[in-house]
Length: 344
Image 1 (cartoon, rainbow, N blue to C red):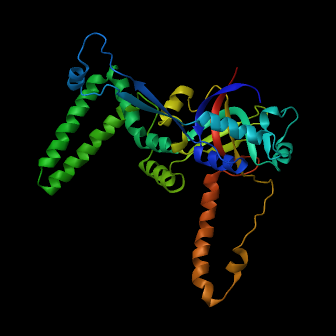
Image 2 (image 1 turned 60 degrees about the horizontal axis):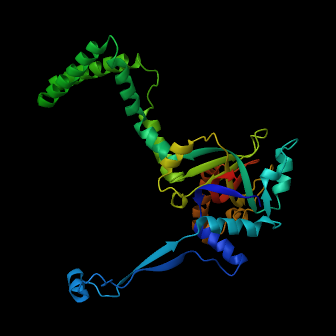
Image 3 (image 1 turned 120 degrees about the vertical axis):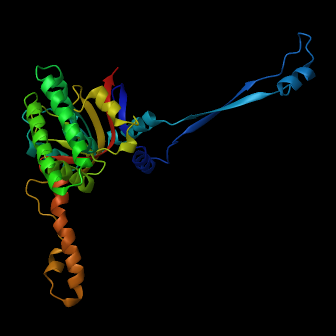
């Protein structure tokens, strides 16, 4: 293997230890060095050692012990890669020439492989971040609109509308008569419409309908909680071939993924490397083994209740397949490490 250093962004330590321990007798996950510092107190200057000991509360032979713990993340990754590197189940896509390569040929090459390493362009999709943006999009849009109008000729009109809205809301809250309150609410709605029209003239961002914001949040909370997709594209001439990985937040080397998206961006302009296990390999025409097919056709009364619940699970498989994004020619890889590799 060529000599490189890695800017390690993600490393699944637990799974890497599990795999490496099956290839060797085990690995040291951390080492501790004990260092003693200090020594005897020097009394050659004519100082009474006993008096000095009493004042500083120490013995003549006091020493300080320090413990240093090392966790070999990079060393473990290097050792695991070295052990897998020459195995029949490993493939390095960086060494496969993309000239005249198509999805069918590439799938044929990958069919017998379990471990993969590939370097390419990356798209990062953080669904929690998407949910947060969707929730605050309308407020941010309005803020941009207000900033735009603050420097415009209509600022005076805008200020008047804002003051009128405040007065109208206060008037409605103080009104006890239901009929008068209804009329004042109609006037309030008219003022709000006037303000919205004025703001729309200064920004074409628009607003996301409330139902869509709620739907996005509900869908992500149900099917994509904590999902961070890394999409790798090893070959520029074959963009249809994609390596899809779901990265767990707890395995990022940076505690906050925002630091990574700030440093590299959600679509980095530098290539990244993924090393991991192939976990889904969809075929062009695929018919999976279906253990429920015969059971769902049975009419025995004793299994009606069981069949009903199993049918519900079967109904949800469509949704789950939809959000897994697992389809030919894309493959899914369980990442052990994601890093930027730098040649020395």
